[in-house]
Length: 49
Image (tube, rainbow, N blue to C red; front, side, top):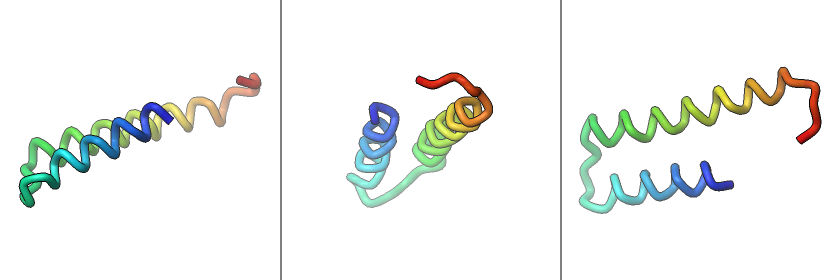
């Protein structure tokens, strides 16, 4: 949930001025890729969290 809120905040900040710069897009994409890798890692792991 913390990661989801971080991504939402980053998107809101990027859209605040109406223009998304490549730097802002890269920051959002970096966060999304990080979460995607984390999900894949947990899916492969047989332990219960």
